[in-house]
Amino acid sequence: MKRWMRKGFVALVAVMTLGMYVPSIDIDAKVADQGKIEKEDSFKTTPLHLKSTIPYEGGLDYSSDGDAYVSDPVQWMADQAKEQTITKLGPKIYQKVEDEMEEVILPRIEEVIQQLTVELGEDRTRYLEVAETPSAGYGERIFNVQDGRTEEVLAKFHVRRDNRPGEGYWFNFHYHSYKDQFEEHYVIGDVYWDKNTPPKWMTS
Image (cartoon, rainbow, N blue to C red; front, side):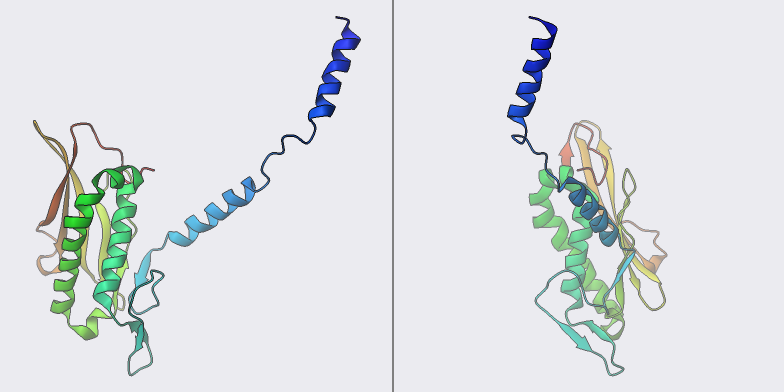
């Protein structure tokens, strides 16, 4: 085939297929939106006396000095704890251990939060914050609970990877309390992973 015929054929095919494939033009918009969402989601603290971004059955009440606060702080904190814990584990891990998390670990975290609020009393409870974002990689931190006015940390919730000989990997959920200067590990529960090494925290 002569060279000019080959060029003509290529040009003809190009003209005939023009407009048959149009790439999606919202790709850049999605990337920009994801960046915006990540910035919005990366909060440092979420005070109980401010309106929650998580929907819950309760509403806001107002103190005598006019400050708004969450009317059901225990439920609000439980919702925040669940969100932070799921974020910490990441989709790859959470999908595999979801049943045990929902049945054992998350209810136990809620119990610990309930105990803390009873110890602190109603006046102080309404100023609690879920502080700190979960640590990625191999760090233990899930979240801290602190007094929003003084920034005093009252409880630290962590998860650790344990490689038990002959068994495999377990996730040890525990917390530390202000009452003993965060020395003791108070066990929330253990969740079995597998004999294979689990991925890093927050892995998609």
